[in-house]
Image (cartoon, rainbow, N blue to C red):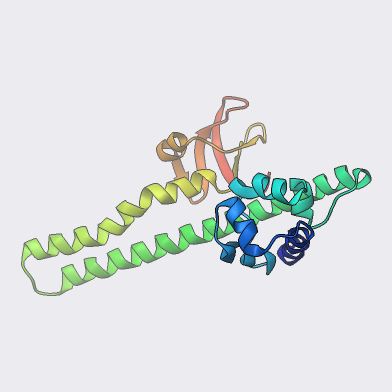
Length: 202
């Protein structure tokens, strides 16, 4: 989605309704700074406020996301375009989440190894060695539920038996054996277990 185009469209619709940024903000229960960010293309309105914004400006959500008033002739075409754009946006977000997962995992393991080496090589009391190792394990144990959530929701898993792509439950991801981004799980479509690979697109 073209945030600059959408921002200019919001500004034009606001002016057409004879509203200042502050007046629009007051109607929506937000700050005028938020409106300013929309109109300069720095960010998009939150999904929770889009319907109210469209109601005040007298436009449809489809108009808002396209950055222009959509005619009936182009309605289906624009819907298709927005759907494709949303799919691409999800794929980009999923790639970023998976990259973050790798980064957090690597940092956690390096931190743990550094403290284990320190505990093993430096002269110190046994209780201090144990404490250092526990401190090294703590970030990994704390981050584990969040990393598993990323594994669950970012992208899809593809069944090796029937090719069905799906988002598994958190429990399935937690309990499954895995090698890298491939997990041994039951497919909700064919109900057979297989080594399912992580895929970004559906």
